[in-house]
Every structure is written in structure tokens, then in C-alpha cells.
Length: 156
Image (tube, rainbow, N blue to C red):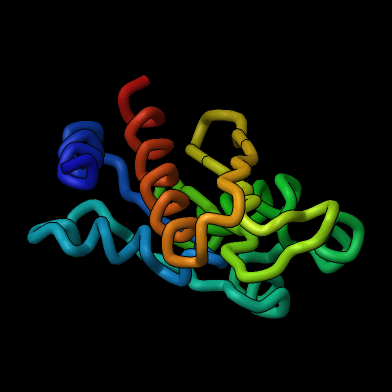
């Protein structure tokens, strides 16, 4: 299981992990903490579903939300950076997206933005367009991709 591998890598490197989640509602933190003994490397999770919670809990700029919208790489970057700033973690992943149903021409259902922040490295962002797979599938794929981003960061 990839979550076990991520936790083993984090232990070996002495890295604490945080997750800042919107559309996944805590699925990344749940997947990591489903593994017994994960408390030695999982520092915390932030479920910031509303824009206000992104501002209050992670320090996301209101102007970034206004200018780019919650589903944007700019917000994903600020969420990941904020998770590091507001925790004792060394590595943070963020997720913000439109799981569905719904969306718009410019931000379709299934669009998810990710951020990855690690002490001493530039914060990375990327966007995945999963399409209208249904809410559960988009959330599941987003969770799995976020965990794979953590794995890659820890393997470098």
C-alpha cells in the first residue's frame, strides 16, 4: 500500500507530514492515519472546505481567492505553504477542486489543483482534469494522487 510506503519514507527521513484538503474532505489524512503507528510522522490535517476556512486556518489570501478562485494552482500553493506555516510539519500536500456534480466552462467538474510544499524546496503545483467521473471517483483519485506526490517528494 502506497500510504505505508510514504510513512516508511517519512520515518526514514525524519519528516513530519501535513495535509490541507478541500474537495477531499480529509481523505488524505484518513488514508495515512489508517496505518497503525502513523502518528509518529503525520503531524496534522486541515479540512478547509470553505473559502473562509482557507483564510483563517491556512492564511490563504482573500485576494488570491477573489482573483483566481478556490480551484486554482495559486490557492493550492498558498494552502500547501500555509499548512507548513501553521504546523510542525516539514512536508505538506494540498488539494482543492470540483469533485462534482457541477462545474463551469472554465472550471469543469473533475478539475483538481494540488500543491506540495517542503521545507527548503520551492512549492510545486499542478492541475489534474479527471472529468465527470462522479464525486466519489474524483475524490478517490485526488487522494491517491496527493499521496503519490508525497511519495515522490520523499524519494527525491
